[in-house]
Amino acid sequence: MNYLTPMPARDIYYDAVKNALIKDDWTITHDPLSLKWGKKDMYVDLGAEQFLAAERAERKIAVEIKSFTGLSEMSDLEKAIGQYIVYHDVLAQVEPDRVLYLAVSEEVARGLFEEPIGELLLRNNRVRLLVFEPDAEAIVKWIP
Image: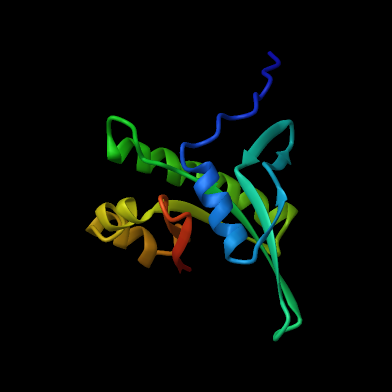
């Protein structure tokens, strides 16, 4: 059976995150970042690069944006972490110099990733976070 992978719908915070990255001197290089593994196609929301003159180095990131607006916060978390792991593992093979981040609003970061379950995921290095403020379209912090 042959299934086509449609382009995913954009998250409600897509524009806020894209604009926040641009304000933070990132250049959007992929919109979306297309990945392929075997016959499977995947699309990370954004790919971006930033040149650090002081270090004479270039940083590359991939950003998956999640709003966590579903009926169940845990269901949203499980889906986001599963998707993150798949993208992370494929990126490690096809673009090992690109670092994957899960972009979440400051509200989600406080309400979920400062709770024991979120702290556990961060402590065990399951996910890297880009925390943003949607109204200001600003990056609040990076959690490696």
